[in-house]
Length: 180
Image (cartoon, rainbow, N blue to C red):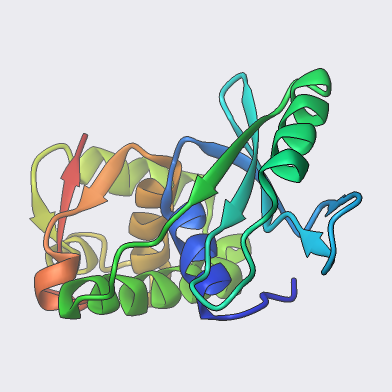
């Protein structure tokens, strides 16, 4: 994956953190007949819906209305919608949330293959009410903490749980895991 710019990185993190996103692909298609060339930023599948996402960057040239309408018509013929995404201005809380999700994805990518399925089920069982990540690590102490944390983050990634206070406090053992 090659993310082109901070805006694409921010959107990628939003998509990775969204449990409704089943699949995504970066820069899947070049919009035809547009000068300068314009590439779609992401293709996303959510449930039974597929969309092409165009990140609107202040520094980028706006697509001509005719070109965008022609692309939307083509996308519709392919069973896809087109969404123009304008990212909200950054805040301290949003930056903290993004940093936390980078850490979560690092845990998942580095350790998920080592997490036994029984550990994820046990973490889910122990987190039927709000509990801190540190408490979960103490309760399931017979597994290394890194694997317990990864199991908890997998629950969040799969959409069965959420981390309550990421934007306020970031990611730590005090972070609260809550079932949805």
